View 1: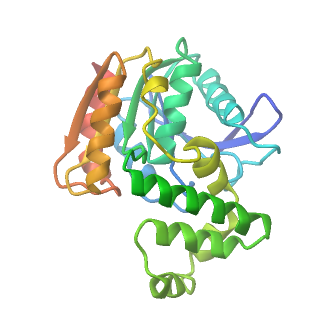
View 2: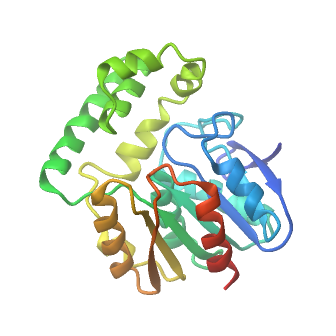
View 3: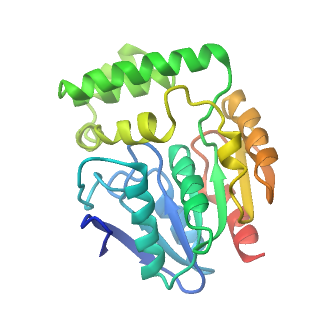
Length: 264
């Protein structure tokens, strides 16, 4: 593990592997190095081609946090990683991490060389936007009351789990790892995705670097529509649907696509 210090004094912990041009991997909600769901394997598959930095976003794992939160602070974290990697890097983000990667590409066009996004969870469906508003309102209330476990459970039910399944998962050994980073759900879902999580086509149009927008063939149907909308809005973007993949994309399917795009 290595560390760097972000602009506001926050310590950002990361693993670095491989040699070559730099690639930074940005996790989605609740994910970090101690509770990895594929990023470590992805880093291993990319390392023969690139210098790969997989980091704990602020408030997670071995990284510290400095309130108050702002999306700009997380962009500064990515900038600090880019500086540590030599001044420029390709950036890949998954789910809400893809949203952060998008914002970093807008803010750091001279430092982010290429952007790759997998299933940024925006959704233009009216009913879905209303559900999102209710979710973020309840999420804020639970976190303000210190009910971190209930906040994690609320998120799990948002993505399809039943109350019975959440109660079962609460007994798993990894539950404390999720609960520990529950406050960061507000970073991803309230600050990054916004009050209705609508597809931000106007902001996406500000991305000036080559971009790859991806979704999974077996994922939620709205993810495909969102990926198409983002690819259409970003001036220099291409779209790709990964055969047989869900929202939990397999590193074996993703790595060759990233190698091709980042090496191109």
